[in-house]
Image (cartoon, rainbow over all chains, first blue to last red; front, top):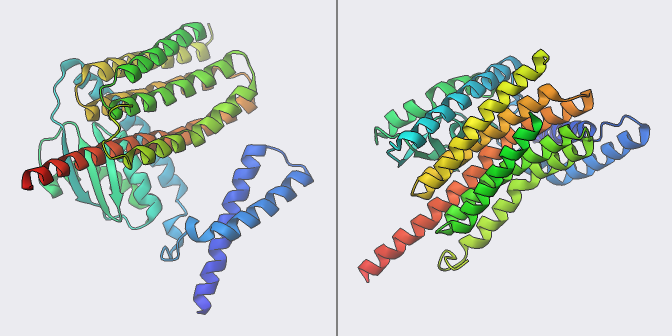
Length: 170
Length: 88
Length: 106
């Protein structure tokens, strides 16, 4: 029970910190009134919603605190991938050669944030589009499909990104 | 340079609107709406930079954050319809 | 023409190329999935390249920070939006197919 209440307090604190950081970023105002209003508002909102923001089973700090070097590398990789994949789609638009199909696979990532990021990243990469994310089960529409085997499709689509994301979050 | 980009984005927005009006099914219309959101966001930021007004950028920021919530509401509304809303 | 403007011009050219590709794809493909692929991916790249070009042209620090924040939120919101639309297409197709199956059974 002791550890649970401690974890609850920590979640409350992190939600509060996040909300306050967003407040300062958006108002860009460091006067006393603005800061006080931000603290009061974020206290109220985090008291109401900390359980939704960070659910209880995510009991590891690495689940939602990124390692910044890994995040930076991942973002750089994502930008490159975005331009590459747009080029591939451009070629597909001009030639008209597509082979669309829906594939399913599972992911090894454990934190909710990492899974959501993975599904967004899959939407960015060549001709793949995440349709559904259900716990660790992803449904993906693939424009240039060459296999229907679950494991092969998973390796072809997400292997590189999953490895990179594994360094950012758990 | 900014003027050329402005005309291009306007052209893209018009193409999206034509797609929106032509669209055979509701899905096609939603796709066009999704693209239109991105194009109009780019147009807002472009005008903000062109006229050197920060206020436009704030509007663009709010539109960016809450834009897709409208999309979510539309899909939720259409999903409960019995016949996918072909007559819309 | 300063070096900033040259880089901005390159960004805008990339944006125009991808935007045109996205529009052509939006009109050329037949099924909504492929249209979504072409439209959302090329549209995202077009808007992102425009933002980068405008970031290079922005005149003050406040403007630049706001554009950076817009880029960060755009990276989150754009794939989420296309995912919502894709999921809607998937579910509506799904219900049509199940309806047909039910009719066949009946």
